[in-house]
Amino acid sequence: MTDADELRRLTREFLAAHPPAGTERLDFLRARFDAGLAWVHFPEGLGGLGLPRSLQAVVDAELEAAGAPDNDPRRIGIGLGMAAPTILQYGTDEQRARFLRPLWTGEEVWCQLFSEPGAGSDLAALGTRAVREGGDWVVNGQKVWTSSAHLARWAILIARTDPDVPKHRGITYFVCDMTDPGVEVRPLRQITGEAEFNEVFLTDVRIPDDRRLGEVGDGWRVAQTTLNNERVAIGGMRLPREGGMIGPVARTWRERPELRTHDLHQRLLKLWVEAEVARLTGERLRQQLVAGQPGPEGAGMKLAFARLNQEISGLEVELRGEEGLLYDDWTMRRPELVDFTGRDAGYRYLRAKGNSIEGGTSEVLLNIVAERVLGLPAEPRTDKDVAWKDLAR
Image (cartoon, rainbow, N blue to C red):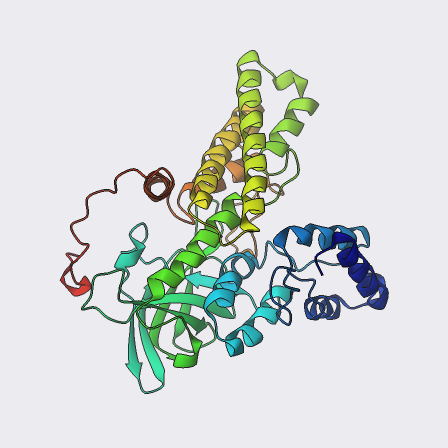
């Protein structure tokens, strides 16, 4: 099947057999996955039909028009945007069959155990150790800035399995059970007052070797699949015109003429155009994904996302004047998702500060764009051929 009309017919037949109004939400999502309508570009039997990624829009339009439930993608974004493509590319048949369906339906939430207190921007310097003991790996270490760890059933984890080789070569990629008694999740309270992020301590966590993704020592290459998809997921999300951060500012401008000044008008016009350019560029990037895996171009989209969010939220606070200094709720809580547009201007301004850190700092992404997109000379590195155990720390 390669024809949009045929896929549309198939979707309508599915809806007739599973009417959204009369089907329990989870049953509907499971049936949609089994019918290959979850992500049509995935293989048959894994939620897809082996079709071009672009045809997903045909399915989504039919389901939306019928009032079908979605899988709450904002809540399970790490699983959908990062874990799933990595499992698809590097997982075994058994791993794909076990993890992809409950991941897509939202029955199992995922988190990402990558960054560490001493290995954030320089992720390859990570020190969490995994030591082989028979058929298991025993993991000890600490991870930080882990979104959704307090909700997650599973985690994608990278750990050092060989300290005697240079830092990029001694890493292995695992799937970690977050319900293991050796996993401790502690909240990290942010500038917004809530604890959306966490730090995770791993103490003698035993991971069976059949939960390893890729070859031993090849974890850095596997992690690049995750990281490239992460940047696209953050910076290249599908938005309507005036979607995202620019929407609330534009609405305030139209509804509150007494707040307008010439200078604010000029700045808003500039940011509106930049936001629209970024939105259209993201659409083009998603179309390019039809031909293959995401590349370093996602770093540029994520850079633009962070800068625009910070500039737009700053303009919104300034536009609102004294109102912009108010903040709705400092209550310590552990949210299930980030809601940029459902809170007030103060929240957007504070939360946007993290956009240039999460998903790769803007400074690191600038290096990626310079070296891997523009082809500029790489920065000098003195640790390239030095064993990890001999690095200064």
